[in-house]
Image 1 (tube, helix red, strand yellow):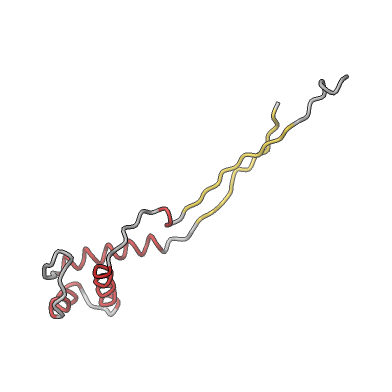
Image 2: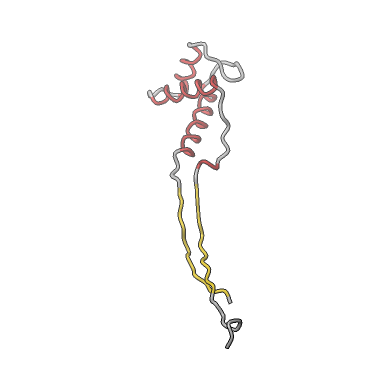
Length: 107
């Protein structure tokens, strides 16, 4: 037998890698005024105020919506729900895992 006839076994490994993170979510960056409005609504909601009281407080403070209109309860509700959804996405845990390992032989 010659060296050319010898066969060298070559191995390979296969696996599944899964990575889930909010880093991959496209996020619109809010301008400063828009972010301040979101922060104020979030703060008032955390203080226990309802949408009607928040809209009244914002109107009393002469704060206007992004489209320069007065606030009403359903608008505050929509804005707050968007804030909650964004927070939920950002607070999701990062998942990084390997699974289904297998070793094979090239023939």
